[in-house]
Image 1 (cartoon, each protein chain N blue to C red):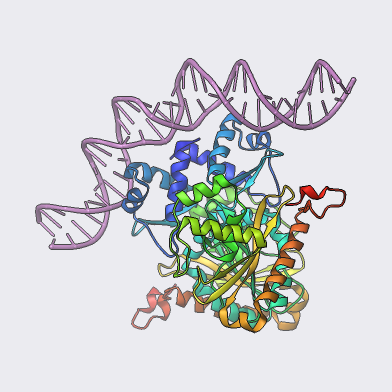
Image 2 (tube, chains in turn red, brown, orange, cyan):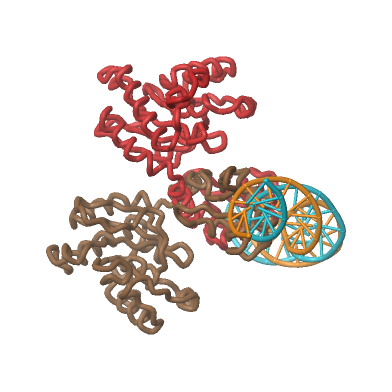
Length: 262
Length: 262
DNA sequence: CGCATCATTCCGTATTATGCAATGTATTCC
DNA sequence: GGAATACATTGCATAATACGGAATGATGCG
């Protein structure tokens, strides 16, 4: 493991605050390193446009070179291209905004979004990162992780992000078990107030969870559509995407003994 | 300057190829470093999800952590939010796809795009990076750079990217002078064949060029709209964005002697 | 105008990245 | 099927290089 590189990455993460400029001193404080070291790293990043320095104020922010890098990273995820038509279908048949979320460290990342025709929007933008223990789509991701991962995640802390966020470990584990049982997650404003989220898991060819898809919509509209209809539609679309990603459900596969079924 | 960090960045740049996985050996070859060193750097990146490794094939690609980083970098550019309404107006009044491009190193980066209602699309996606000596919007960026920058740029090489790309330094300089004179660039398929681009500069409050905006459309449609109309619309929108970014044209400012005018 | 804060540069030190060589692993070809 | 090859990975001695304390320089505030 390369120490200087780890430090440099920490620095980038510290800079990852929207609409904000940082002084050298502040960054040094944030990452707990002497100013001279931070300065040297920032100088290197500036060289490559990963960080930009305002010459007048000597303040720093993330640079434009990271934009194309991020887009390249997004393009590489083949999941995205497979998901787009499914999301469009999901959005079209529900009239709501459909999302594709993938796990990234201890966060859920909005990788793709298809907007419905409604006006009242939920603000989940592309590239957003939020902790995994809140929101239907993110909790779905959490529900299918390994025990070891879950243990680490809980130790890392369950921050309250809205009034209804689950902050108790035992309660969260129960909730996740319920999600696994149903193969579907529903959240009632545990991240966004007055909004209901419905999410379902997407598995890859090796059976591991790779993403979740679903919709988020204001309470009022859900009543009109009907929650059960919504759940069924989300589940169907998730299954279709699983299929496209090469996932084979063993219990459905012909010639496989029933004992294999989960 | 931190050597290990520079090497690490080189590696990321090498990985920045869409839809492609790299083996350790190939990357080591690309960046001209021993495999063990490359391996150590990749390991570090994997830790932070900046790079992802397929455990089966041991191939590497850019990781999801870069996506949110890229989006954060994009959000930081306040230009973007100021530009959006102007681009919408531009797209609406021309019926074409409108673009916002900023300089990033020796490349032009598509920072924002508003699509028109047409079907025949020009494929310039958000996050794209292309050399600055071709395309109206990118040449505009080049036209207002310092002499020193231009010298470096030309030394760095004028690659041919389409049939009509200018690859001769003298010819390019003449072209750039013409752009400065007119305050507007028009390109006839020097990057995309059979497409005409019209771009105009956007200046910041310090008078430096910070971006270019404009439209790109197939030859056929330009004839219908009329090139002169198109040019005027682009220029007007660029001026509006200049104004929004705090740029003050001295020759227009009341009370400023005419001798200040450029 | 002087003081204080912050950014930047310098430089001796030892930590740390380095790359060779050896080992482990997968794949190909005979 | 087994040997050989190509590639990924690990270990380790070396010295190159990142490190951070201290000195210097710049900027802004009282």
